[in-house]
Length: 119
Image (cartoon, rainbow, N blue to C red):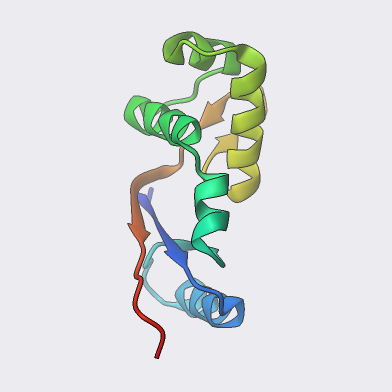
């Protein structure tokens, strides 16, 4: 089984990000996956500190965990963990099993942020 890697990028040119993802998907060797956010605000609004804690807990565990157990481990309310996990599933950072448990499929997550002055 291939160990999955994710690179999170920031870029307003979603067409270029889509082309890059298409090239990676058709490559003969696995080069990882990409999740692009158009703005830093979109990135920071979607991947809050509490959501990162969920990803980190699941990535560290390496297995599948139910929402109630995850909430217990994180010391958080089940409803709020469920809401955050649903958003992370929508983004593709987490996956749900048929039984509804959560898992992080990525062994490596890299955030690529570059900020420069306007030309």
